[in-house]
Image 1 (cartoon, rainbow, N blue to C red):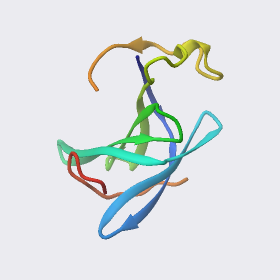
Image 2: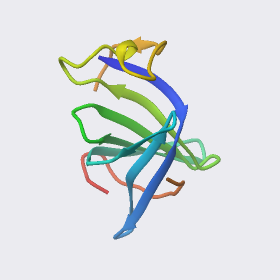
Image 3: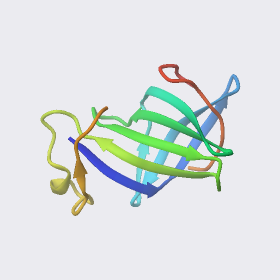
Image 4: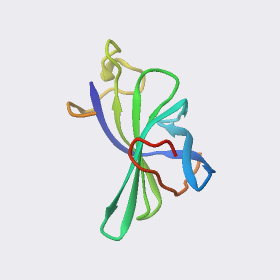
Length: 118
């Protein structure tokens, strides 16, 4: 199940070998430590670069984070709830999220390409 979020988040990052790596993020007063980056990609939106990261934070849920260079804003775009997990509305602090179906700190900049770890 996929929950569409689209909310700004604070993200802590490290820079390693010319790449940016999200290591933690805060969403709705809760801290999430990134345990794994499962994918990245970048795209140009006009004159601005948008960086996208699929990350895991301790469990089997996957969080879609993005950074746009237009204002240097991080967002939590979606949460991909793991199979067999609770419905988003039954999780603490998640009531009222619109749920869709589809395909699979601090601010910083950087890049990566799809399928490569930053």
